[in-house]
Amino acid sequence: MYLADKRQAYHTVLAQLVTTLTAALLLLMVAGDVYAYSGLAGGLIATLANAFFAFRIFVRYTAQEPGRLLARFYGAEILKLVLTGLLFAGAILWIKPLSVGALFGIFLLVQLMPIAVVQLLD
Image (cartoon, rainbow, N blue to C red; front, side):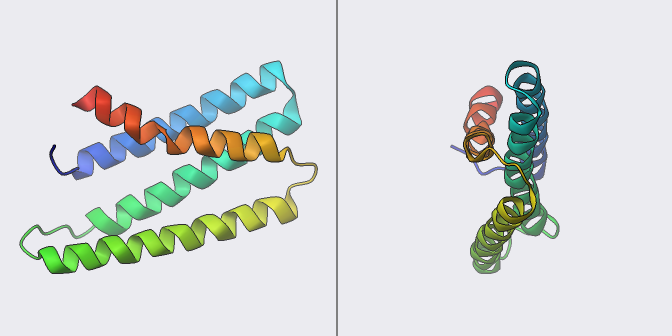
């Protein structure tokens, strides 16, 4: 196994964005607009949080300072979790009507995208 680099992180975020848009479009065609924009919100929450994490890690990446890199990983993960919670709270409070199943379902689908991207790039 190898460490992820900036290119792989950006490919993962791009794959998550494409998955979000594709799933929202499929929901629009199959289930209707409430499910589509609820799913879009869930997918965008996951994508934005992961893009924030990738940006925080790789903006000034230096492998010569492993202690600082580890601290940056922990800090970025904590901020990502806080951002995710705030975005979910905002979606639940402000999006009316909301399909909670579509919101969390597409969020989970998009969160699983890095596994597929790593398998494809390996």
